Image (cartoon, rainbow, N blue to C red; front, side, top):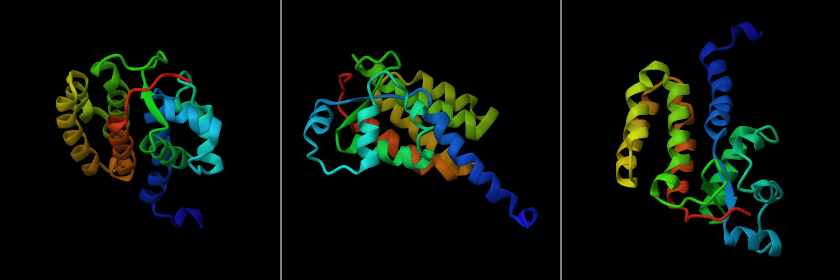
Length: 180
């Protein structure tokens, strides 16, 4: 009977996809030069879903817009894989390639702020200020450490922090991209 289910596991199942979708809502990805070549040549051996996501990322559409097409956890995994392969990179919400460090870090900061607010609620205020104030990658790395610890300690954050941390790492390691 469904009433006998453990309430925390039900909450966890409901919290994870919406948190992933919320974190991706404003993140825009574009194909890199290598990604555009992959669309034309099909040389990286991508699976059908990976290829579909690669094709749909146009530098204008947010990743959140794609979340309606497949489970959020699967979309997140595919995005991480495509970033790690150097086929896509985050861009600013306006659809342009990052021109400087602030613009390159903006999508990462937005994801971190959204997940902190979603998972931590009101106690995220100081962390959100720290993330927002990070002016370079070194300062953001410190904020990532604090964000990671807070997420690990929270009831809802610990369920999604690993996935989001992988996206953050991949985004910070990826080169700047040019929209497709």
